Image (tube, rainbow, N blue to C red; front, top):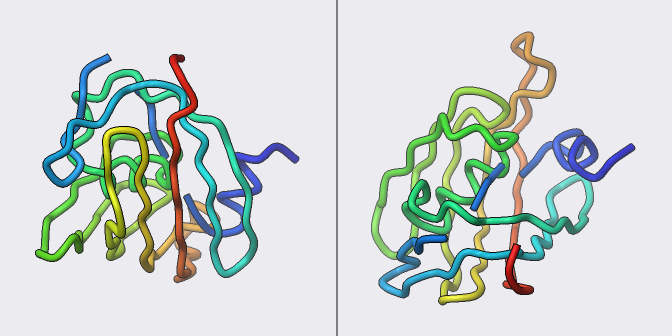
Length: 138
């Protein structure tokens, strides 16, 4: 089993990646990132290329797209204090994500999400944490 299905099967974490997104006021660099994640069912890591940074608004949006199997059908709403409400169409249904830290080359996000488990109405709520560190260019 590959990491991607393992991650979703473990009931969690969606993205793609030149320009920069502002991570709490800090321009975030595009490039190759190592995503380390954990949730109620396990943990893992995956290299992800974030090149088209203009499609991302904040680290919570990056994580929402990653959870949503790389589909950009997600919206985020800042609630204040680094907390974001997220809503998607696809693998991720909804959730609350907190940006714990964010910089030009790394970020860390935690929260609780409701994940579509079988595309037939089955859902599970899980707690998650994801940290990302830039490794270099894509």
